[in-house]
Image 1 (spheres, rainbow, N blue to C red):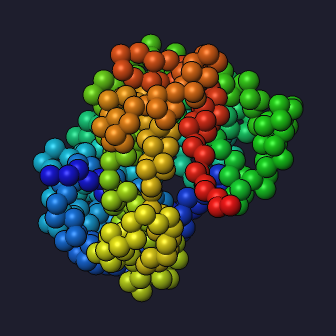
Image 2: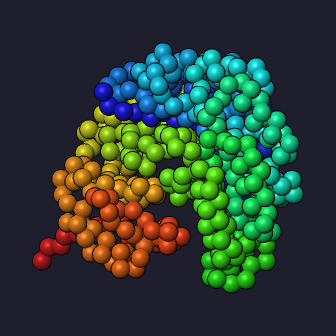
Length: 412
């Protein structure tokens, strides 16, 4: 059977963080209850279309999925297990924030089949947490982590964030030290991105532009300091047995996030819930981003979308359901294969490229590969292509090099 990943979006949070541009918002209990009801209906409607797929992973993201009651989460999991063919050894991850976990919730998660937790810490420094708009303390994080361990969770990720306003290298190393003392199985170490439309952009947007131009910043760490933080992260985590398997993700051997690896390797996935994205049959589409519409039951009809995909093969973008349906032609699929696969430290396999696209890698990207190798940004070994350390540090540039020119034709 074909492999499928499921993403379940829970868009609610206690308070939206100042740096966050994800589709999330506070909502009262009645709205959350109504949302869960519609989510269950969406599962019932669309699951029958996926009979030829076997689910290898489920990821509850948000927002703050742990804001739901334990019973609501268990109800969603029960519906997924009943309607989809979920593998017995499927990885099932739930994102949590400190202060939203209880013993009862964690026990219900375990019973429902959740076997991996992702805890959002961001910083072990109370002042930094306040500055970025987090509503928890480091002590509350420690309490949540301890509760999860006592509940029997043996696969936990911790999210941390570097290059925060006013953060020095020694401040970042303090957070890493505190996290390492807990020995989580996985650490996601992201660098702050100042996104437009967020309170952070209003405060630090000009500073971000200065940093991009190589000028002195007022509040944000310099580009050089940010790079130093990244390099120290890799070295310190490696010394503690964490392997970097993707640009920002580190794990103990065998504890890599299978769900995220699926994204980077173009495994088909179905998004359920408000604004969730899907990738099926070489097409990308997403649910409505308007909560009032979703609560009316206006989510995508998967059967209708896949019929449209089959009917519109060879076209680019067409309107379908609640949004745009992006049909990926061979060129777009090759681009995504390269710039998603190269995010992983193992890189991409030449044999897989040839198997998927019926052409040798050099036949499409030979000139680009030679150029990047001369620049010291990629290496090629044992049938694989991967980024060097220098390539990772300028990954945005390297990955953009794999965008292919659109072929055009003209008539006399």
